[in-house]
Length: 476
Image (cartoon, rainbow, N blue to C red; front, side, top):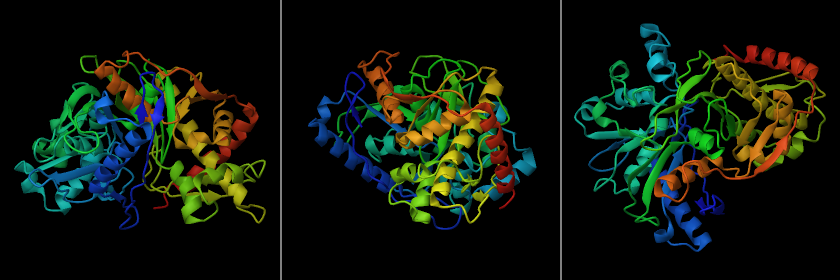
């Protein structure tokens, strides 16, 4: 996406890349395909705007955070496909580590419990299963999340590639000390990961390097930031207590906690984005594995809709869920339940139920998961949520946002820019480059949805939702 000096999007291009599922529970991406797609969409966006690379003030990179790559320092070739954040192949490793040291052995330092979700155990799995220990210890291999991989490739790769990441991405590895912003040596030792292969950690907004090849040659890379922290910035949630939820493949709710690290058993403490030279900032996060992916399953798995946007019309064809409840736990349940043994579950089916009821139950399943997370954040901070700001691809669906407001009982405000993740990366990069003031925020919004349901409905439906969750856990 290309943004102007007023924070308005003037061009956008996107391409899907292939999802590899070599076995149940395994999800991989081809890192080289991601680089190729990055060059392709950059060229397309420039062409659409009639712009040249020399007119671009700065580049910001934002990414799905926990997906991780290992590559050869000399050849620049990945040693394996990227292991994606949703992948559960590390379940046995996590169980082993938890049995030995306890599931919260690293929570105080990293803000995270042991989980298949995070990057560190994925690195351990690759090192152990691909026979990489000696090469990693010798410094022959480099690793990083997708921001780090793209930065290295864009800035010259084997010739001059910059090997760095930012605090927001590093805070999702299970390997970084939140308070010091440095790699946590006990975590590295626990997981058998040599520090020699890890990138340098910097603030989200910093001058990382210059693009060495491709359509953006000569552009300064001024921001690396994990997608959810980028959306927090893009939604102007930069003060303690402000909250946003991004609806993409998963759904991610973050509440800014200012300069304070708040620990909670159900939620994650994570780094918030800052500019270089600023004090560290933090947030509480609840991550939901399946949101847009549940709608995609209706499309690809069941063939109920031709495209994802059709779910709204199908769900609106019925006045309620018809007694059907769908817990979309395809990859287990993340916050606040943290049950990797949960699986997708549909309950309440009768001969009365039809495709519309299942579509509506899908949207409600997303909304109730968000409610579970927000309840946890409010309990941890002691601050009620007056308004939830939302963004992401799913927020084009007005019915979903109305359901979300009804489920929460508070207004839901859609951002003026649906892709707040890209906007946040652009605003951070632009702040470093001097295009935007550090406090710049995009004006306006995309509509506010007020609750229409009453408290009795929320109590009744909430109880049924919790009963459905109880049936989903323990299945795997």
